Length: 304
Image (cartoon, rainbow, N blue to C red; front, top):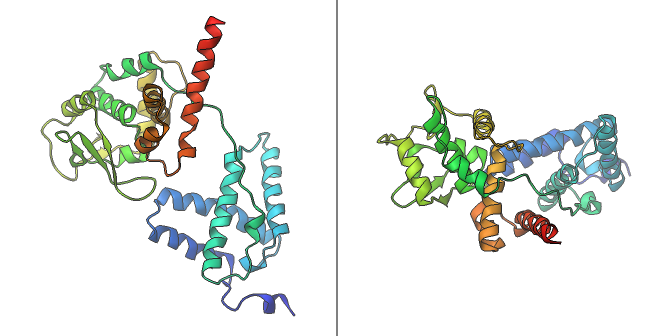
């Protein structure tokens, strides 16, 4: 029996077609464009490997091929003089397992070679976060320049809500309900609208920034009449953190880490932090418990 005869009749004609169908499925499920693009990049690496291995369809792939692919990624990383992080390795495993689960559920392949792939369980280093004094310095700052009020509202919003960079960039003024103290997030990692609570301090800061403007299509954070991009927001955060005299390597995502760490330290409730960050799984949130343990060790060392 030839290889063609061994393939199921409904097998995809090639990698490109199968992966395109899978990516369309992700989009239809409401996955964010960022997530779909990430899957596309990871699967593209496997397609390049498959071409070199002269594999024609996903039905041709064996567990041995997957083992070789994972090994090849480690070699490619080693040639660059760096060690690939476990999270990066896991991304390839997750992408391949999800793709084959999609194909298997639709009878497009008669076997799933990804059953040999096991995602690594790991705990990364605790993230760099701001302490209470640094958070207060930023929240109480009066940044210089014509954009000082906007930048103050931007930094305070991310720091006091834990919102992601893309979520913050996508906000319109009418997404902010100062009376109910709620912000509606229309662009989220999971794709579904969500909301975050606003503290009284943040409401006052946003009220000064917004003023009386209430047009529905006006972005909350703008520059020269256009919505700030995620890259622009990143640059603003880094610059304003430095202006406040903070020397830590803080990025926009560090503000989310700082929010989560401070909330956990104040409550000790990891489930509450999970809800506030809108994590699907509490294991994703547990890194903030590590931060608390690290602080605990430092305090113990002072009195030992």
